Amino acid sequence: MQARRKSSNVLLDTALQEFYGAADEMGLSERLISILSRSERQVKVSIPVEMDDGSVEVYDGYRVQHSTALGPSKGGIRYDLGVDMDECEALAMLMTWKCSLAGIPYGGGKGGICCDPLNMSAREKEKLTRTYAARIEPLIGRWSDVPAPDMNSSGQEMVWILDTVSKMRGHLEPSILTGKPVTFWGSFGRNEATGRGVATCGLELMRILGRNPEDVTAVVQGFGNVGSYTAKTLNDAGVKIVGISDITGGYYSSGGIDIHKAFEVIRKNPKKLLTGFEAVGNCEKIDDVLFTEAEFLFPCARDGVINQDTAAKVRARYIVEGANGPTTPEGEEILDDAGVLIVPDFLANSGGVIGSYFEWAQNLQGAFWTEEEYNNKLVHIMKGNFRRVWDYAEAKRVKMRRAATMTAIQRVADVIAMRGMFL
Ligand code: NAD
Image (cartoon, rainbow, N blue to C red; front, side, top):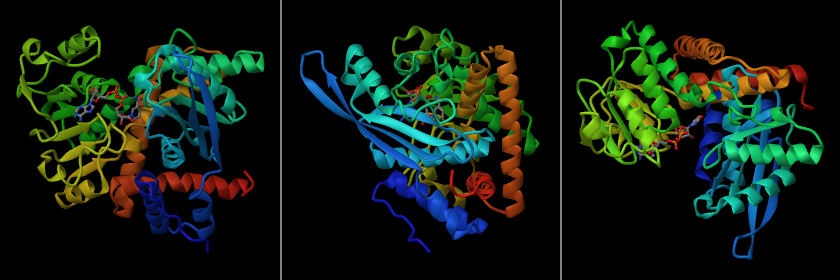
């Protein structure tokens, strides 16, 4: 039996220990545990960039393919000073489980560049991105590895990568990555997909609990891409959103927040913030909404907000994780003891990667779906996935996070058993 891995990197160690815990609970064989606790491929590249002042900086770039058992590895490319191989490996493994659970034909990957993108000019960022693209070009392809935007990257970076790779190959390859602008091979619906999926999980939970959405109160932390569309979808379904927040603070109204006014405020704000919303939204300014009285909490801002210090103050009975990793293991223990039910991130926010799969599928066919087609398919898949995890958790008497991990690992294990070890 091969020794089990440990890592000094907190993110990687958490991912490994959650995997080992779930694998042991489901009785996965040691041979499959050994295979799946390691990445298939890890590549590090150096990226020289001539800066605007004429100096040369050499950046480190990474791409990790954790598993391609189910299909091409799928996962974003992030630009951040915290990026290293361990972080990419942890996130690539989580993508394997997320894609598997989502029921889409993808494995898991992740990449990134260790840099400070907020202090780089657009020209410097373009050179950085194009050289990174050229150096990882042998890895990426519609049937091998399909990147997407992640922290501090967007449609612009995807277009630079796509353009670079297409020029190297001598023909346009729109299906090698997702998250492209709608004007250039992107898809209608993708922008709202993650939030729509998060809200769909919340609404499914209400349905299973026998609750009418119109009698339910909720708060949403974060009003960026995920939070704003989570709030809008819940609001459209009749849920009373009593609080929203972003880095400018929280906004509370016992009668319900006017979500449309909140959208108007961020649309007019150059940084897309809720600055001054209390005046036009007729609500009260508070510190944050994490501890506000409401039945449902949707943390959609960032990781680690529900932790050892904050978990005991949370008053919601149900938490649907829109952000990646908003609850730390210590925070979760406190919530478990208090009987709070958590819908885990890699189920709740998988609308993003399911939406990316829709974009890829359209690109492969050279087709364009309407927004309605896209949204209907997304909601249908999210509802089915939620139900599958719920039923598994009930049958095995485990928490939803554990049930989701076990369901995800099982599909990958089944396919490896069918395909054999030479993948
Ligand atoms: P974003 O940058 O668009 O929005 C983040 C929002 O959170 C902003 O409104 C910001 O002001 C707010 N915020 C940050 N720190 C906060 C704090 N301490 N308290 C309250 N508000 C705070 O980012 P996003 O794309 O919406 O992503 C949010 C989270 O969801 C991240 O964890 C991301 O990894 C995850 N996620 C995003 C997607 C996607 O498709 N965008 C998919 C899956 C997971």
